[in-house]
Image (cartoon, rainbow, N blue to C red; front, side, top):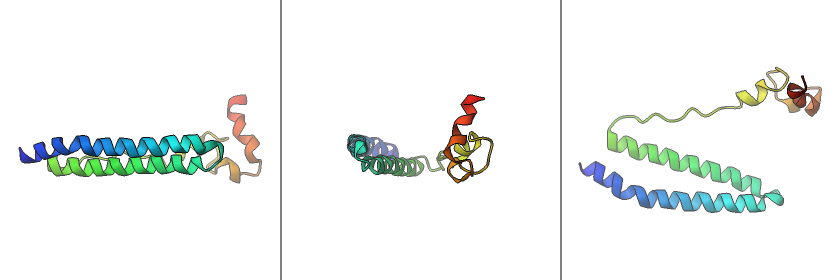
Length: 106
């Protein structure tokens, strides 16, 4: 009972802080993307959001007393499979970037 109450009472302040931090870094990154600097900030916003998700799963494990399963993130398998059927990325192939557009032309 005490763990449930502690989880519920701390959920809103932590979620509010996570939203403010991620939304501000993401909005700043999108605004600065025309200068090129913003792309790094957008990537940073995604990493911060993943960090808050890990922290939330840790809090959930503490309340439930069992393991909360985490997501299985994709590791780039989709990007290489659609590029001409090769296992290497398009940029490292001899044909160059022009082979990346062949999947829609056929």
